[in-house]
Image 1 (cartoon, helix red, strand yellow):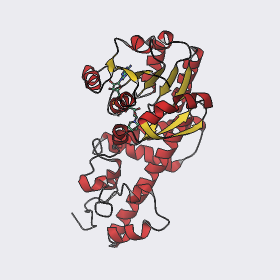
Image 2 (cartoon, protein in one colour; image 1 turned 60 degrees about the horizontal axis):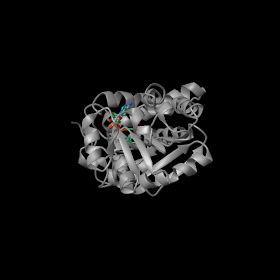
Image 3 (cartoon, protein in one colour; image 1 turned 120 degrees about the vertical axis):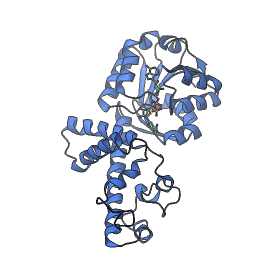
Image 4 (cartoon, rainbow, N blue to C red; image 1 turned 60 degrees about the vertical axis):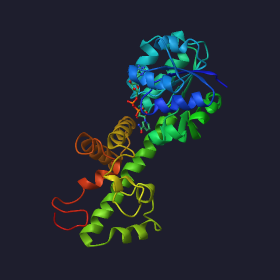
Length: 304
Ligand code: NAD
């Protein structure tokens, strides 16, 4: 077991993940650019690292939970972290980043004499706090096995998806399914409204028929049928629309890079980008249903 972990990025996700490593018995040296986040992590038992390079010098493993690929690459390449680490240190990047950036990060880590795993997560802040995240990992079998105790301390499940970048690939493919299915479910409810079909009646049929999916039965975009879904609390996230837009942007990059035609995925990326930049900025991604109703109609299909 790696006993000392350097943890970079103590934000919404990284803060509670670092705290769970402490709870599991790890010594955690934390680093973030925002001093208040370091203070909060220290209250949870994390030690404040003196600098980026200082955090890794004593570490057996380095976990990153940063906003985007450029942050991960800059940390690895420009902040002396790879040079300061002991040979063979395990670098586990849990951020959601571009597949191409993830592969470049692996290359940089390995070229510096270390070991790398991409391990993005699903489960959100609630899962990070409860230690119930799912990790999707890319890298060698030996790296995955070495990271297992760490991932265990922060999550409930870890799937080894393949080589470098495969974890990121699984993450964006899954979220592309989710986005397209959420838009499909939302369009069906809006069609039902215009046909005078009750939400509950559609739910009762579709939830036990071939329309069944997570977007319908867990995160139902209209209030009523699934009491726990964000629609019942004015669409407070949940999974915020800007995070969905970010993940779809990564999927769109990968589609274009691979020359893959995915008209629905690309359309979903476009729709979520516009929604997240406007009225959806603070809302759950299921609130996209609001943009699909004909102008001037209400949730029940009647004129506003
Ligand atoms: P966040 O913005 O709350 O946290 C990121 C942190 O990284 C910030 O505190 C920032 O100051 C810090 N940071 C940036 N550059 C740094 C550097 N060089 N050194 C140290 N710290 C640095 O974001 P978050 O919501 O915690 O998300 C983190 C990652 O997890 C993202 O890639 C996101 O896509 C992914 N993710 C988020 C969620 C979610 O529900 N929030 C769910 C799944 C995956």
